[in-house]
Image 1 (cartoon, helix red, strand yellow):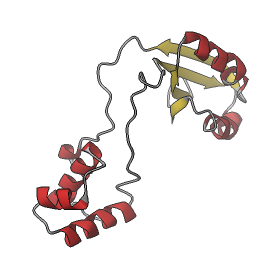
Image 2 (image 1 turned 90 degrees about the horizontal axis):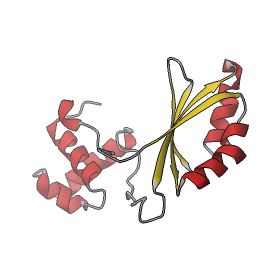
Image 3 (image 1 turned 180 degrees about the horizontal axis):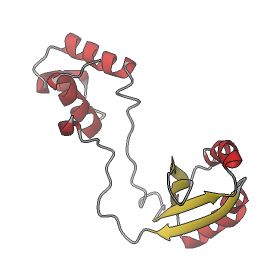
Image 4 (image 1 turned 90 degrees about the vertical axis):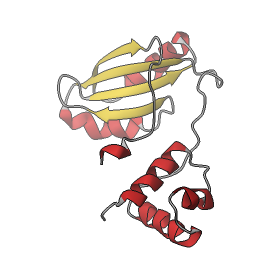
Length: 153
């Protein structure tokens, strides 16, 4: 599917504000509501829009700490078992398979260091095949966005 300028603008608008109505989007891209709705539907069906969500304030919810953990497995045969287990841990908000020195990179949210220590001891260190787990605590947030650089397309 080819994305034209209007499609790209629709994607930018939706990722900036998922609450924006079809009528508001249509107005901003100079379309009437029905063709705009059809474009959005086509973008969803084409897999460009996975889902629309609200972004919550972690600090307000008491999740003050972000930890990045590098995981090295003892054997490649443990990858599937690790993945099956890691997706069940709600504190792990992102998990990436890596090339290089480590096998996975995890982004973890936690209330505090004590809560992370408990998670580490009770769950993370017991995951199948974990040989090494190195954690880094983020001291502050400079930039975090879910918006993809549509203008570069």
